[in-house]
Image (tube, rainbow, N blue to C red; front, top):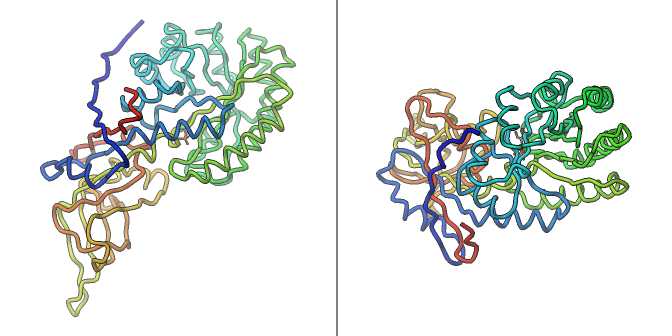
Length: 401
Ligand SMILES: Cc1ncc(COP(=O)(O)O)c(C=O)c1O
């Protein structure tokens, strides 16, 4: 069994009462830092977990660590009892090192390298998703005693990112045939899974997918596969609690409608839901340019900050998201049309344009909330710019770690 080094432990700062972002920023003494900084309030993750349990008590979360794999985040979720969704050998290695037990790990990547399957086998990670005959055959060859979870395609009409083109069999055309292939090879299919799309805003997509999944699940029972799992994937919003409540209602209702005549453990693979709102990224203005009209009137201000689309703000390109800004100037200050550039030499490195900001000076901070998802794991240091480090906080009465 291979093991990597134990991940480095990070200090966690304790606070009482409500989280005072501005005070935390001032504590960070950013003035001398070249990189931006992330402020992570772990309390937010705990609250999200408790909301999940309250609103969808029958759905067990397996957090998708691709979303944010920082140690305090994973340790918090471990303490809360979450499982994890991993996509590769390295991700499995990372969570085993932190203390997740193999039965709390789902290898949720339908296309797997053989070495990754062998690593899962050596570490007793038994459940993995598949969506085609080649991958079922690979399981037969390299880990026949494991369980295959059949992933089918069921895309939401609207999402930041859909997966149907890349992953998931056609449930009606191929689902039963794939289960028969598995049966013939002696590979047990123990469940079905789907992902409606990351950042899903077509809430009834969950109803449609659970309907389809329940039919496939029941077909598996008829074929005498030992069916036990329905995995409803990810796609839950990161910072829209109202929308999450609506999705939870739709999911609960769909499970009642389509799944109440069979026994199944229901799991999900939420990513951004747990971590998005926990993070705020603090950037420093380190340069600016002013555009003036022919009368010399200030028309627009262009700011250059120390993080951009190759770092924390990659989702502006990948997912076409818009960022929110928080500044710490007087609310009544005069504002100007503003553009914020990231630090690299790429002219497309733009965080936002045509937003209203007061006239900021070199050294002022701009904070960007909801930056916990697909940021630390998807950033690169293009052009030699340093990526942010994270300062962690937790409310005193919520201390888990
Ligand atoms: C297989 C799988 N599960 C779960 C997730 C997490 O999705 P989300 O962050 O939308 O909840 C992803 C995201 O890419 C994924 O690919």
